[in-house]
Image: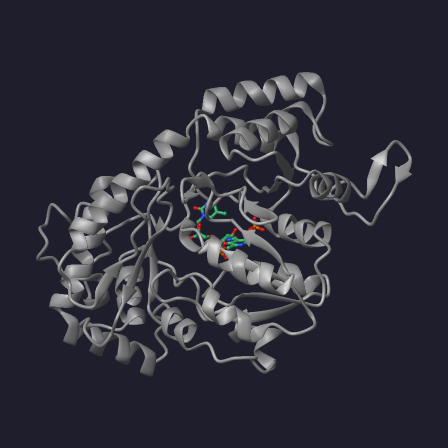
Length: 411
Ligand code: T4K
């Protein structure tokens, strides 16, 4: 961080001509990284073994340890979260239409669409940001094969309510658990919910394997299918028994995963500390709400998300983002503009309107957190938000001027 704090909080916002608070960009999604020496030792062993991929010893160890942590029978590690979603859908026999939220990262929809399954977008519950079980039922047709919930921000969907709808209509229930590693709901770990769940272990996720992901399930047959499908459909040497692809996780990724698993408590500690600091630093600002994690559950606190309600807040969400970007705080508009507004989905007629999704995509802003973000960084970011509000008229004018001219002001 630059020494703007030394100059006192009276220094000018960068958007208004001051110098940026941060010399180096403060990112959302800076990777959490465990013990480097342990990782290096594991890589040495891997190189000595000359076993780099194809169900290696590290992958098998990682799968066993994740299955134990998530209290689930099977964990099948794969090369990324998108592939995890695709293999999960194929292994569960999903086809036709799948009901899912639009308020998610576009990978959730793309993974299905890529293999000829049509995403049908359902609105969310504004209180949870997750798919609204009450709105699922009206979207079901004879083509529907499944409901795919997304545990947005790591806060689990209403699993029970979705299970009731799925049961009533004979549908599969699966989850995109990309955000929810090491989280629980109703005292049970995410990973063992529904028929199967898909995780992402991308660099930006709470738990990363550089790139990576996994499918978890308690169903023996689905697990066996996933294992075959991630390896070209092989069931043994020279024996292909199904369609498959190359979804394998490599050993270097698994070594990173094993190392990061050992550091989970420190990741959670840093995230929770930052979340608490953002709460106190942003407290009492009308129109600004911090997304909270459920009491009494396990959470990874990986996302610090604020909702900006422009009716009460002094600035629009995008004006606030412009202020932060000028300071080198690269806040992200996850998930803007919603999958249904992106190609190829935006050319399709929605089966039902998505008013809550539309509203939320205009309000959310993810702020930097994770082990790379210090308490002092959080204090500085909160100070910037407060100064932005204090100088709202000048900020609004600066953003408007920039948009009117050719100056590029993010977003
Ligand atoms: N389902 C859900 C609900 C998901 O959120 C995702 C992925 C998936 C499925 C698919 O899983 P994967 O196939 O990706 O395993 C990022 C991630 O690339 C993506 O994995 C993630 N969700 C999504 C929420 O965020 P972008 O387009 O925002 O990425 P990017 O490159 O802008 O990176 C985000 C920030 O992280 C940047 O400010 C820079 C920082 N960063 C990134 C990397 C890769 C670092 O500081 N270091 C790094 O190594 O999608």
